[in-house]
Image (tube, rainbow, N blue to C red):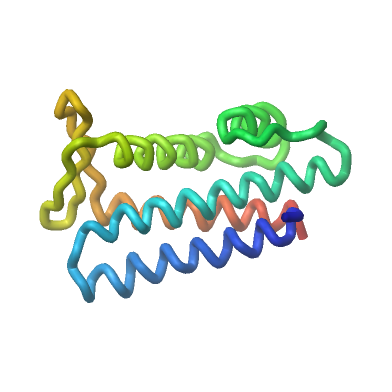
Length: 153
């Protein structure tokens, strides 16, 4: 996919996460949707990051890009954050969402509480994700995608 398609997909995915958060979640009241929302936010931000990286590669400002997430994220952090005025909070959100998704995949136990979703690791350390946190993630992701839009337009 080229950088324009990646950006369009990022916008489509963040809209999906927004709709799930503000429309579907209050209607269904099932906090297991939190995982789907987090995955959508993460996908949107990764597509945004990849869009900026592919844009830079297209104009030959960075070399060939590796396939794996960690290497791409490192290149993004080193070469593009300062150049395009992307905040550490926005970059950190990409990494943190990836960790939460991996924690969910590896967790033996997870459960729902009112307004929270709890993921336990094998040592039963708990990571809670609340609906207000998710709403903040969406705000941060939208700000990040606005910055990416100014880069790729």
